[in-house]
Image 1: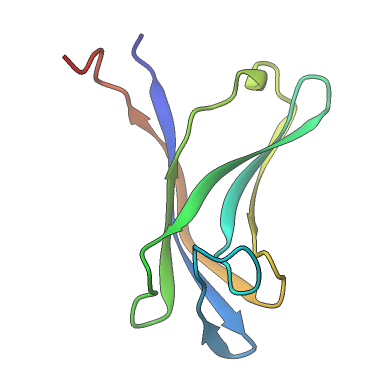
Image 2: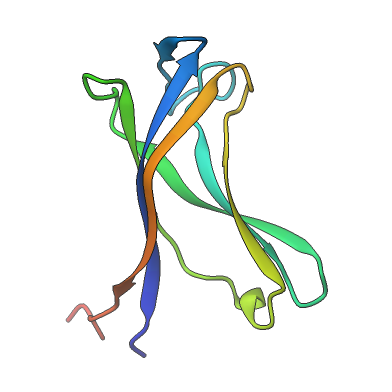
Length: 115
């Protein structure tokens, strides 16, 4: 059945004071890269969280910006949802996060089969 999938893109810069900071997508603590989340209140008022975007690439660009991207399926509990919030979490909380050009849009699903 044809449908659309939400897609997110944006730029993200990590700062320690006035200095750009780096991250590693492969660390569990410390300098781990932030992740984008969608927090949704379902029809019963229960808050649910889904990860929707991740840092791509190993290094930031020359100005310190990382690309963040993701594509995800909307969960079934969205039927009758009460509200939604976008959030980015930094695992250790010691860095400031600057976000630029963040977009969420639908990508049309066009393939009925892979045959």
